Image (cartoon, rainbow, N blue to C red; front, side, top):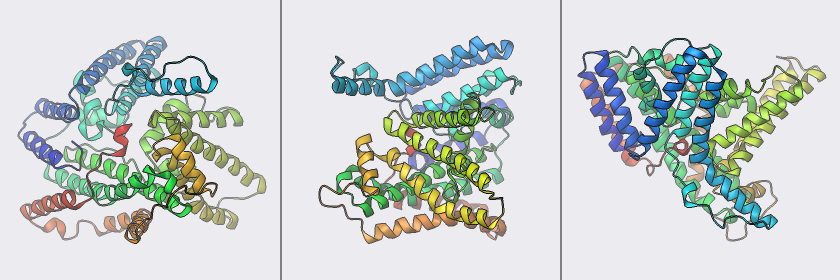
Length: 479
């Protein structure tokens, strides 16, 4: 079940109905936990085996760390959890790389990846593993001292609105809320439904329709000209934004229906004036996780300048690898790491040149920073989207004017170009639209009777599902 499917709508209505019939915290917690397990198991029941094993084992590690704060026990927990990720996510990449290098250097290797190394990646494993690791690291550091019951731990890990693709939350953001979930409130359901529908619009009307354009273009990179390569990449940049921010808003809306507040995961990233600002606006909870648990652990900025630059690069390389088991993702991380290092060097150059904050030179550079940042970020998406690294290299070379199409170029219809332009405009003016909506307050919509309002919600949701683009899996479900 994906959030934008009819089956999920039926599931959600059933869960809300059962939840509304509860009269104690214990019953409400049981309904949410059961619903979360059913939701996760609906993808593939066998996934539940790894989830429950990981959840139970890590709760044991948490309890031990709570009493000992032992570095050895934390190291063991890290080795086991990261080992699980490596086994399910990266073993295939290891063998593929070994086979490629063996063919190049002429040393004996397997002729193909062994079948036992080609496991299907369990859904959401990267996300729920990071959730549990964050708690254990916080306990070890002394940042989290409040006891967590096994019930609260299970809810924290499996809470279905955020389990599959985030937001990635610390215990301090969610555990206390889940330990005191309240009876269903009409205002919470109403607000959650509005937020959910906003995300649904992004997913079905924008992301899924853009996906229909991007797929055939990236499937045949040899047919892309300079113009179509840039358009295809721009379309994907918008697709992944509306897809993932739409999912995140739907997750926030779903949680709000049950009285739980989740943080925003996106803050209009395509209006950023630097790559550093982009990462403060894009997938905010992952950026924060990488900063708090990887970058700072490496030494952060409390070291020499060049060591700090190395820490940045390592963090972004591993962040790229977290997104997918492919060298194209590693190179995507390398590009972003290079951009961040370049930005730090540029700031030093500004200081050396005497450019001060708020000066005319600073304002001019900031204004020029937006299109420059947007182009740089769009260029990196080639390596994120392309099916293989050679495809990504060919498309990026075409975008730089280094390669020409080897066959008839793939045409992009005028209507498709118009949609890309409209989606870009919407991504850029979205903060102004949201600010206007917040200023308007409840308007007259809230005065409409509940049955009429409910009917309008249902009609809108069904229309979006029926007439949006072909239903696509959320992109980040693969990570």
